[in-house]
Picture 1: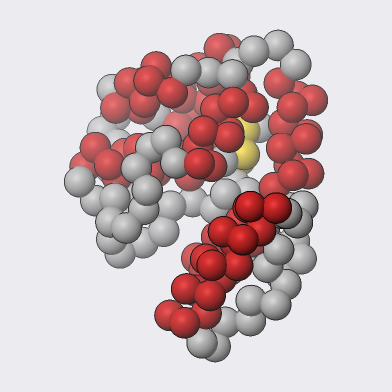
Picture 2: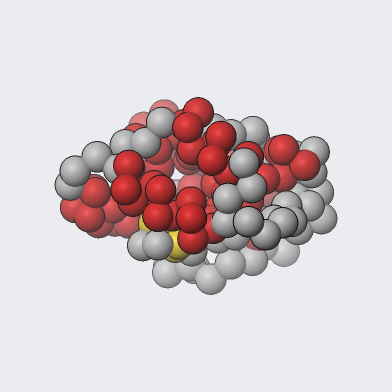
Length: 152
């Protein structure tokens, strides 16, 4: 097994929430954050499992502790993706289709209130950012970290 270098999330971003690995969105970002946590370079990111991680794990149907242990063992990206696909609950393709749709759908209710607060903080820290088209957390992350995203 080759040595995996963790990203230093105090100076760079984890991969985009829309980037896929083995057909799995969010997984590359989750991997980057778990590796950074282990390396002590997580910075201001929420430790695994954050809300997005928990949502992804629920969609895929794998155990958070088992996945973290695999990542912590030094497994490579492809090995991790293969493991997740092999251990996912049946019907994963359909659930991922729904996840992809929801990832770009406007949020509502209590989540909308939380998004409005997060947008206010982002705008205060970066007054030049155009936040007017941000209506969900995926777009918020992409805008904040400079990733392309449909609708931005």
